[in-house]
Length: 307
Image (cartoon, rainbow, N blue to C red; front, top):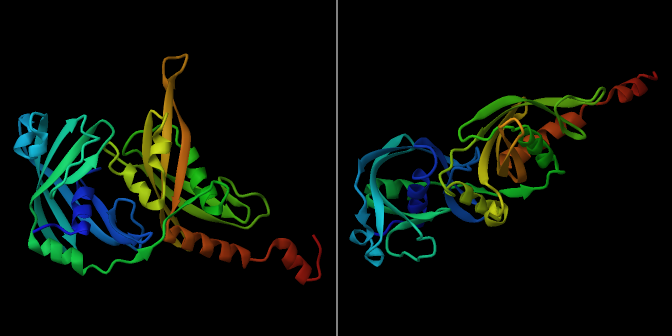
């Protein structure tokens, strides 16, 4: 029985990035997806991925007849997926080989084109209950947008991303910023009303272009950003304040060069910021709170005093 498009999205998402984590199922920009770039409103799905069998290099024609004569590697995974407290176990074979990025592969396979090779995902044992559970999900409809750095969202995310000096998958950092009437800043200007925001940012562990490609759901032209860059890193940002929490994402293109003392210097050549509904809600609440707080001068004028 063919898998539904959403179940295929789920299986594909479990096969990239970290071997365990959380995914989000939702309708983003009118498209049902299962993504690592999930917002608080998405339906959470937990997963773990374990290699069960690593086979020797094989003739890929044994799995996909159109690839007869091409050698590649084949792995078998056990994937455990948790939806609404119920655990489903699926068995998945993956085969990969270089120089397949331009080939069209049909059938019931899930094809993931990466930077230098193609990964073909073959779901060999998917429990019926998983398909039924996914089909029963009530997916919220969300809008993701890309934002300019001079916007309020871009000002906040740009301040967090610009402070990255070392790019390594899995590395993270937490800190504080202040959202003021004039935008985000590391130190609040004297006399200006601001609210503190605690942030945590993490460079996502991406294999090839698996997670990077998901930015296309927000309208990001990943190919344009990748061109000319040594690496492209997805960055996850979590924000928390007295007005609530939010998630957002950025895609950063990075180059490197050797310094005179022999160290490598990493520098961003471009970045795209992705705003989510929770981020827009949080900023609206913060700005509403700030704008409803009278300034010192306003308080003095109302008291018939002057500064």
